[in-house]
Image 1 (cartoon, rainbow, N blue to C red):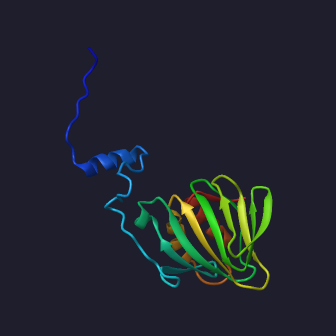
Image 2 (cartoon, rainbow, N blue to C red):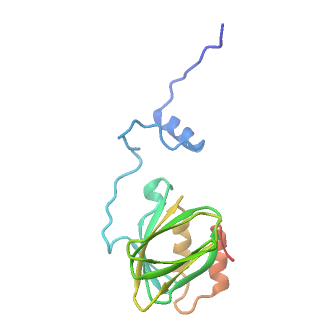
Image 3 (cartoon, rainbow, N blue to C red):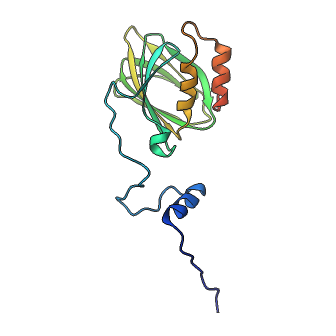
Length: 180
């Protein structure tokens, strides 16, 4: 005769927490949401406003809202703004250009995106971007998983003016981002 299964009654939250620690995202029936995650609506000019290396950024949905599954922000970028080539070791990024033109380098491909265009930059692949032309650009960026919002809070604390690139690099490296 085979071994019998033994089940012990435990609170549902305990089971969900244990499964989540094992990498299981959800065992809830279709259409039922996790009671710890609440819906959220954030208008265009709402969200936590920060200044990152001279540009405005609004944090819309953070890891605190999504059980650290993702983080999304909105950037308003002046002409010539750029982030040099870098690699994320922890997260994937999706860039959605809302306004202006932004040149992207992802891996060995360089392309210019315009309003409505989307780019995907997977972790461990070098990428960079630069606002081209004379028009301000706007982008919405999503990151999976969350966590980078904490890096942006540190960068926001830097004094205004030309950035101390050594300090910026040190902060970014703390979050698994390395400039190449």
